[in-house]
Length: 527
Image (cartoon, rainbow, N blue to C red):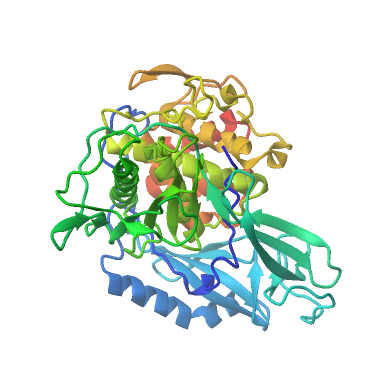
């Protein structure tokens, strides 16, 4: 599996300051097979949507932007700093969480994002910042030369903010995946500060496995097309082995699509369209979220990418999913959990925008595994039942074993079960194991158990026993932490704080749910 090098995409989202999303919290999702109901029966405290219309959402964002100067002054920001609203979330109890990007002397501040938390009576409940450093540089005049296409920024991820250039180099990765490499260099010394790959890739495999499914299509002329009018107008295209553009919208004469094998080109489109629909429905049902960006607009899917391309990827610059056909060009990589995983990279980019490096990169990758697995449970597909195994159907290892295990991540031979000081130095797919393990322990608890026919036996770092609270509650806590309390630089210690705040908001300071969150983090050595 090629790394998902992503999602802190400042240049790819050139208008990131104008991209705003609203995640409306709802109650727990409907029960699905394999869910455990451990823990308190307390109901979430944000049980109904606070914004119930597009106009209410728009007005909340406009109002927050109007007050941005006052907010900056209240926070004690410098005179050259400005706040730009990205997101407003209002809990049912009236608490408002406002997510901002920051500029300095008109330049984007990478790592300057923050979230304010305000009670219904207007009192501050604190602020979550990506950096605690004071944003200031001696000069905004660069002393080094760079490409004309580079943009000048303030780099605030290090100990001291510096003037920098962000350059984007495009090309092709070793496995044929498109490349959009972002490179940050010091504008005074020319020293490389950071780099990340903005194209996100996923698992590889050779199985179209969801069986007979219902699709939402649209009549067109004398036939039908794969346009989902029920879910923001999501479209599925056939690239015809091309590597750019959208290709051709997939159409059919009689509204019966594919034959379940790679010999029929429509089959890959069926799985991609189905995966996008189930992910949309999961976001709506479990998270109260209207699409990836929360704005009711759909992404789109592209199938049959390249020649014998054995991967799939999400690209935030096109807001789309892309799937290859596998080594034999007949095994499309359109698995259900792959779709959920990839689209959840888009969700992360639209909320906390976790930097895809170090511990924040592991949290980014784990978020996609957590929601990808949750989509699989939610779909309740008899051919691909929900489990805590990542990529179990795509057979990337060639021996029938899954790509990752959430109950004991180290079973894949590389992922971390527990946190230690070296975790942030690992590839993000391996460092993600800590958060994946935390989520499994929170949802299902430690020890041996069988869920949907799959045997699990989850250990803890100190031999402690963790009692699960059920997957539905665990999803609510993770999403609330991601959308309201995490920032681009959140590490594992901060993730524990974020999820404990989320659990407190949802279930109370004396709840069994909060106790289980703390116990699960201790179980993976985040203390």
